Every structure is written in structure tokens, then in C-alpha cells.
Image 1 (cartoon, one colour):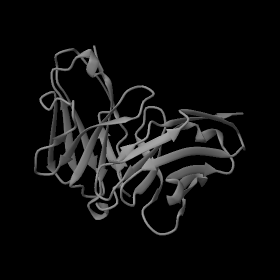
Image 2 (image 1 turned 180 degrees about the vertical axis):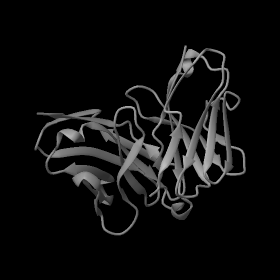
Image 3 (image 1 turned 90 degrees about the vertical axis):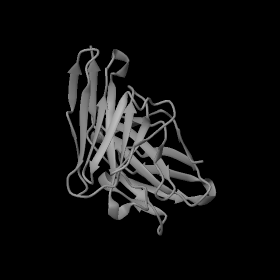
Image 4 (image 1 turned 45 degrees about the vertical axis):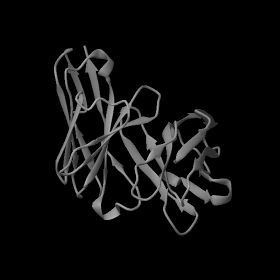
Amino acid sequence: GAVVSQHPSRVICKSGTSVKIECRSLDFQATTMFWYRQFPKQSLMLMATSNEGSKATYEQGVEKDKFLINHASLTLSTLTVTSAHPEDSSFYICSARPLARSNTGELFFGEGSRLTVL
Amino acid sequence: AQSVTQLGSHVSVSEGALVLLRCNYSSSVPPYLFWYVQYPNQGLQLLLKYTTGATLVKGINGFEAEFKKSETSFHLTKPSAHMSDAAEYFCAVSQGAQKLVFGQGTRLTINP
């Protein structure tokens, strides 16, 4: 149980275009989802916390207008990279916290999405 | 504020040898502790977790970790390394429902 699906796993786009990444909890409900960015051989950097039905909370230094997050249901959160540039190329990972385990901090992670901006 | 320190960004052991990945944390309240594993180009998979109760926690793939409050440590061990254990390992800490804070990761290499 506790499967998180992320799509697409790989995406290549031209500079200036927008890209949407979906994160779905397949077998549980998640009021909170998290979006991370990971550079090669580095740890995960939290970008934002996505709460169902409300605005996302962004970490310091993350541009909210650049990285649009929508959490419209208890099983789906989306990250849209707007007007993407080569420096946005990275591995983006989402995670979800099961409603039933919200007090433990435990997260389940998606498979990640590798974005390459040409 | 919470923080996690993983000692050694790269650990190399021989196949069949003991694996020891070190993790120390800082937390103002009793923490919840986690170890995750990441294979190349994949997300993170939970290996094991400590929330309350028994301080020696057993996880998947033969890994275990012991919560030592006096040492603020949560080291990950496996008695006998297998080639398939080669991956990146992340220690993480949270305080209840707060966000997870990750260590910098340790890359484990297994030598044949």
C-alpha cells in the first residue's frame, strides 16, 4: 500500500514553455503533499508544501510564480514549471503524507520526474 | 529547529561485509526518525522508521537501525552487504506532523 505515482517520469521541453508534473496518491488520501527538487548527487531540497484546498506554502527562495502548485483533491497535486529555462532542469520528486499517519511525519515518495529544458 | 548530519558522503564496503551508515540528529522534542533509500533516477523508498516504542527498528532488505537518545543517533546497519544494496541513503527527522528534514545523503558502494 501507500503508492505515490508521478507523471511524467521524463520530460524534455524548449526554453520558455511550461511543464506540468502530476503527483497522485493511488491508494490513500493525502491532505498534504510535498514537492522537492534534487540536483545531481545532492540531497532533496524542499520547494513547497501543498495542502488540499488551500494555497501552497513555499520555502524561502522558491519563486511561487515560477513553480505553480495546485492541490485540488485529496489524491492529486500538480507542479507547473512556468516559462522554463535551462537552469530549471532538475529531478523533481513529490511525496505524500497519508491522512491516517499525519502525526508521524512519514512520507511516501513518487518515482520522480526528470525535467530537461533545452 | 531540526537538523540531520550524515557522517560520510560516500561509504564503500565489500560484499558480505557489515554496512554501517551514520546519522546524528538535532531536535528539541522527541523526534521521529527515518531512513530512505534512493536508486538512480528513482524516488525514495522507506527502509525503516522510528516513532515510539522499541529503539531497535527492523526494516526491509535486512536493514535495521537503533535510536540512541543519549547519543542523538540513528545509525543504519546491515550485517552482510549485497551488491543490490548499492544506492544513496538518506536519514530524515521530523517532529510529529512537521515537514521532514533530510540529511545530505550517503552513497553506498559495494565492492565484489
